[in-house]
Structures are given as structure tokens and as C-alpha cells.
Length: 190
View (cartoon, rainbow, N blue to C red):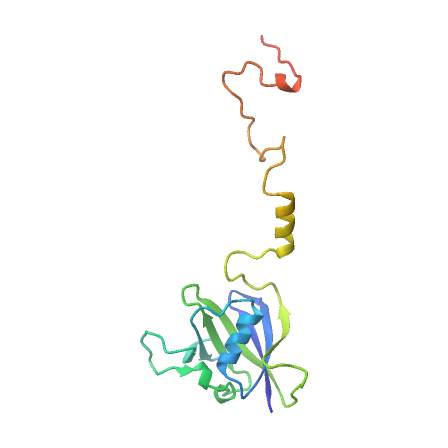
């Protein structure tokens, strides 16, 4: 049984990608779920694949379901379309769009085909992760959840007493005669 290896690039940064291995008999829905899992996205939104050429132009649509929009040709449905049935050339490309409101776009490229299936791998699977992927909601910290724990424990969000923001002028009360007096300094008035 053929095992296909796809590289799923994040469209906005091609140094961020995930390599996914999947059997040619599995469906596009399996590939869809594998991409979401590899980028740590949820499965709550609409999604579609487009068969593509070397210039990443969008062709025939392979959709999670038929959506309420105009189609040039009826879309194929992910669940009933096997990946092997849509491979036309050795380096077949697809454009994958997830969450039509946010328009997360990934460029999917077939990078290798193997005849050897590994019994230790549960297909589909992520075989390589490169780069820090986008955060679906908000921003992702390089330190992850550990920093949030430290921030809560030590309350790092409050400023340290005695230090202000850079460039911030010392605020004084206009009715106060000698603002430095509380620190033991005296000003000579001429």
C-alpha cells in the first residue's frame, strides 16, 4: 500500500511547515484533520482543499461539505474522496483553506511516495515539524504555558515600585512645595 508524504506550508511563511504521512486510500477528511492536529488548530470551522498547479492556482474544490456559495463545478466531498484518486502528477499540489472568516491558508505539496508502510505508525501522522506555527486564536508565547504559570505566581504584570516607564517625566502635585523632600533631598529656592 502506498504511503504519501505531504509538506503543509503555512502560506505566510514557507519556513513553517509540517510533513504528514498518509495512506493513499485515506480520505481528504483524514488529511484535513491531520493538518489541523499538526498545527494545533481546533476542528470547529469550514474547510476546503483545491487541486492546484505549480503556480498555486486553485482548481477543483474538495470541500468538507457543500457550502452555500456559487461553484463553477460541483465540489468533491472530503469524506468520500480518497487522496490517491486526486494525485495527477508526481509533485501534486493542493491549497488548503480553513476557517473562511480568518482564511487560514496552507500550501500542500506531495514530496514523496513510499511503498513501505510502517506498522508502528498510526496513519495519518506528522513526521516532521519545522518552525513555530501560527496561533489560531491570539498569540503564542515562545515559552508556552510555563510563562503563564510564572506570570501568575509572581504577578509580573504589575510595575516594580520606584520604576516608571522609559521617558516618563516625574509627576508632581502643583501644590507641593518641595517634591524631593520625601526622599530627604532639599532644594534651594532662589
